Image 1 (cartoon, helix red, strand yellow):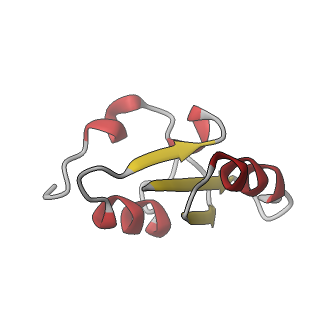
Image 2 (image 1 turned 180 degrees about the horizontal axis):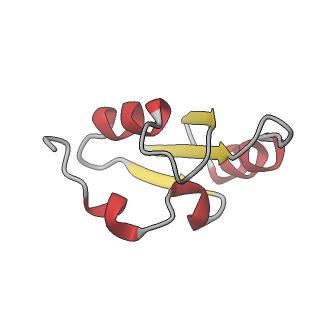
Length: 79
């Protein structure tokens, strides 16, 4: 299953372009939030990572929307 993640950093920005791209990519579920990528507390990202199962594929419109560092990509569900 394709799972999307969209993030903007400020309330002045909107998620429309990312949401559209993720829907066009075929994402069945999209997690969205408005929070700086520098913040460690990102509830929707945490929720998405906790709900990922074998065979799920995470899709982002741009890699920098997921994280500032690729370290987040190596997080295991138990950490």
